[in-house]
Image 1: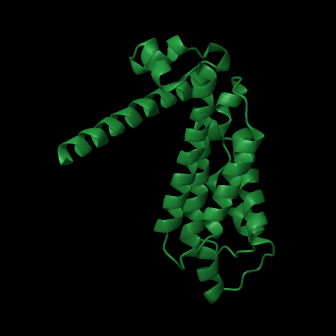
Image 2: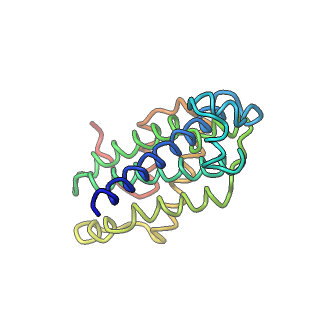
Image 3: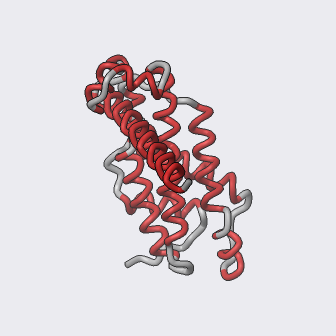
Length: 200
């Protein structure tokens, strides 16, 4: 019984891993060559698989592209959630430093977030972006806002909406100003949230 279960779980893991490889290849092709060069053949070559295996996971390249965008956004939210859960409560300065660095890193590293694929022709789904920024704002607001309010005065109204606008606005800004210093991102966050930054 357990052998059958273990075998099924192992097969599922292999299936998921292969699917992720294909999604990453889709992202890579769009980032480096542009959406116009996206093809089942190019993706298969990057992964080192047959076209028939590609079609085992996705009916066409459009569905693979759609899944790749979702995959990138999920990875963005996961990284943001990890940051939120690992930061030290009470260390506001440290949190500002780390989130500013993380946001810039994510925007520059992740094609579906950075807009690099869009400039190469990848369509940017407004609905997907909206859902992603809502999720990001919820991650920040979920538990930390209540804990913060117990010890500090919250100086902004419409907290969720403010975080939504802040996150989406920063990502759009970093997309078009990729050399923006992390310190500037930090100052924008601090100013928007009315947090006093102590000069070092």
